[in-house]
Image (cartoon, rainbow, N blue to C red; front, side, top):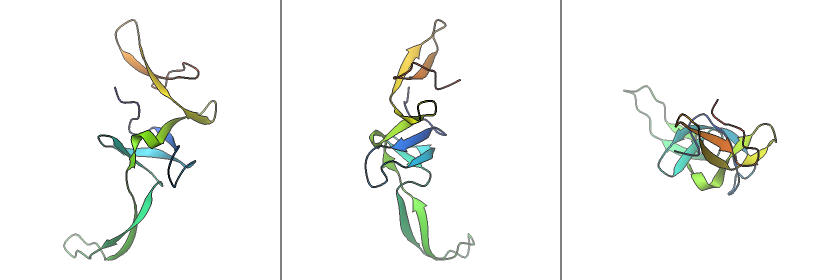
Length: 104
């Protein structure tokens, strides 16, 4: 079970964007794409077939999953994720600090 999933609210704990929060847009193998984090400028050629104009376009690049932590809204801090197995065999993600269930 993955500790970081799509649409999770995460906070960056290392790197140039340390301290910034964002929403996970995509989860790759060991990297995540977070909205508004690790912004780069891409030089894009125009493509008249797709209707895209050329120029310098800002876009998000992926960041390693170890550099983000899930954001705990009750404690307003970054938190670690654990996995708890319920009586019926389902696995749920929980915050390590409080034991509160992440996935409702």
